Length: 331
Image (cartoon, rainbow, N blue to C red; front, side, top):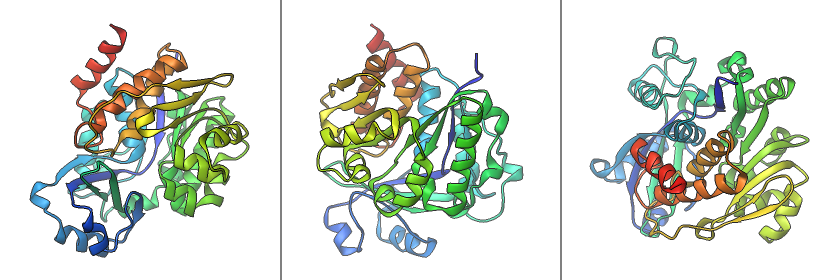
């Protein structure tokens, strides 16, 4: 029996979630609907034109959200990341520890500088647009990995956002190598269409011959495979992933369990904020498959959990909400 269900590696980001109108993006020259990396100067400019008093700060980072979700459902996870010795770094570390996630990072051994932060702008149509300043997170490297913890995990979970940084890519490759050497299953999330579009060679390098489990949305699946439909994309994905889950927004999800395609029905809700939906889907799904549930059952849990996330602001559920989702599904 392994100590950890999932060992995650990804950016350590504090989210600043705010609501904006549609014309905000044109007025401020922002590409809507994707994650854009920005420098600190640009992010501070944007923070001056939004209503910071009405904004909400929360622990974030794509894989960070996923490992927290796994723990909230009752699993056990570990997270390798990098924050600075500043207030946001302290906030991030306290947040993941409060959620029971293990890490080898302590505030005392954090480097000087600025921790990563993400300005998450949500519009009335519930779509989210992110401008991210990575800060010291861009220096995440193989040094931050804990080989013993990887060996003691059922899965490692690689965050696609890390391909944008040379050191982050090195860390992903090193983690994957350790996992494969020790017969630990490798899961990867594409993270965002922009990562697949603008960092295609790096993403293909980390996919390599194949991954055991891939998470992506329909847009990412089609960009990566160079196809025009999910039906075409799923056939091509079988060449690079042994198993995969393609989220389809309001249409649910499509899962391939290595043998059969499984359609996962959506749960109809009024979406107010799609930030964190994919992260929650991955977390709930990985909790399911590491706790004796079939791929169909895990997909149902993931669909229900992510529908709860999009019906409220912020990328995570409260622990009590996660427990209720699990109880509702088992009942």
